[in-house]
Length: 298
Image (cartoon, rainbow, N blue to C red; front, top):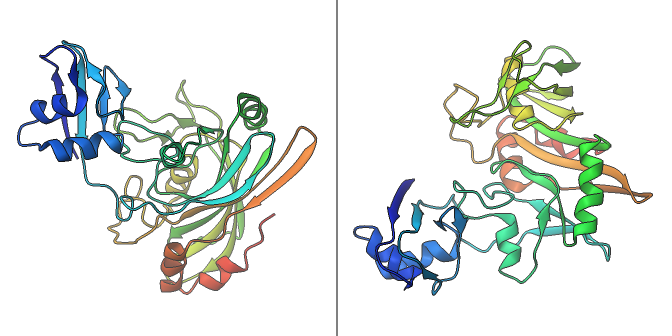
């Protein structure tokens, strides 16, 4: 990724012209592409309007980065559930951020915004994680579901493919996590004053020569919790470039949010996202695809 930060030196000039003139060698066509996909921020606010007039002295950030493989195509995002109360549940594909960030060129909420649907994320999944993602189309729905998540009254089930052979059939990882630092890495630390309680239950559902397939049941929702906990256990997720030291060419991080259950407004909900083809391909390489397809979703 190449980032460019500069100060607008002309008053009330169109954003596409500001970007094209502010980044050496950047064509106006490329400037428009970057603006439309959400890679341009002005004074810390992402702007997608080509003709927005920018004031002199504004700070402009341009992230001229290639999109993840396939992310430049308008891949359909499967809708698992929606109702009249504003609940909107999707099967998030790997390679998309949940919501816009300065690092993410495209996101789930962006995709729907382009279709005229404004969504607020209730929970979040890492860019490379696929599966059940809960969003809301109304403030009351966001508030009700947000409260359930904050209270820990949500049951979440993940599939996790990890390096090495996990010998224990079942276990619980209970170690505090310190939030990601400026490098983007969280860490497990039982004594750090900034550490927050994090608990993950796991169960082996398949073993191969060099990998193990787990069902993961987090009872807390810390940033990167599953990735850090498994790395701390000595069995990082297959394909985890941030927390594993093993070289990888895998096409899908070994993590999928398989199912989610919660009772909101006295209504019981249960959502399931099928294992994506790219992850099944990785599992097939290890002879574990059948175990994933037979995995319980409750």
